[in-house]
Image 1 (cartoon, rainbow, N blue to C red):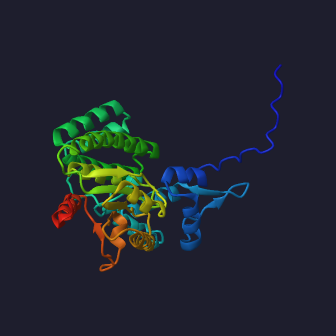
Image 2 (cartoon, rainbow, N blue to C red):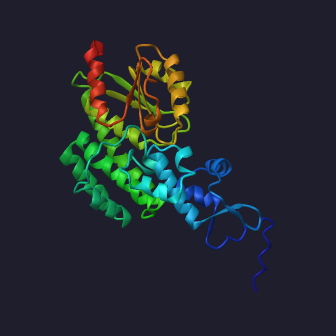
Image 3 (cartoon, helix red, strand yellow):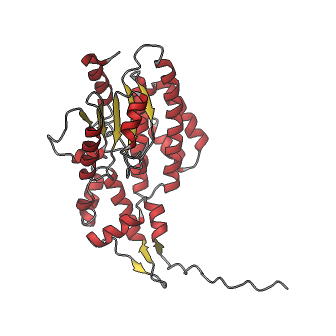
Length: 333
């Protein structure tokens, strides 16, 4: 006869049927626990109940609404506008065309208005059905067929928006969206590396562009899309990834002789934080180093707030024009 199992001195509380704990909601929606608590105090939503030990638990309906709010904020809407909104207002906003990269992948400039093509729908279905090898193969074929620039604009951008929309509607799980992001990142990094090796041979490697996001901005796929478009233009790119401390960026610019610092701001970043971060960096960088900023948060920048040496992008297609302008000023070595 087996020994009796000792009692756990710190047993897990029994889950409340139909309700999710705050850690589960954080994983499901991509909204941090701190954000959920702040919204609860500031806007009165979400309005969790308490379980037997006093921890917050959220209903299925609240989780669904939080998913929608996350999607709308990633698309550039301010929390103060959408969190207190009525279900009818949220439904209306959700029907509007997507203004950013969508989902947890949202990042640098806004996606151009590209119609769904023959690649997007099959890729979305393969992702939902977990046919990942087929998805990689189809994306690889599209990359070879279109070339890197058109692949980013015509396939990756609309597909990322479609994935974000499907997640918002509850048709994709968070882990499926993460898988998609990882597959796209692998494809783009390989293609970018190949182009960067070639660009050193054609004499067009300037400008040298350092890419990153600031602390509080975790989205990196859009930044990688911009890097890919810069590589197509023959630029020399170095990405630091996401959330580089502000004080480290000027040192990185100096160490690598960068001509441009490219920054990404998704809808998660408040307009005040965007302005503050850009202004602080502008004051720390040499005048000759330009700042290129993009993302759905730039939709919230006040007109006329642009500073000398700071250039804001609202569309992925602005990237080639920015490079041409830089070279047209005689800065090319």
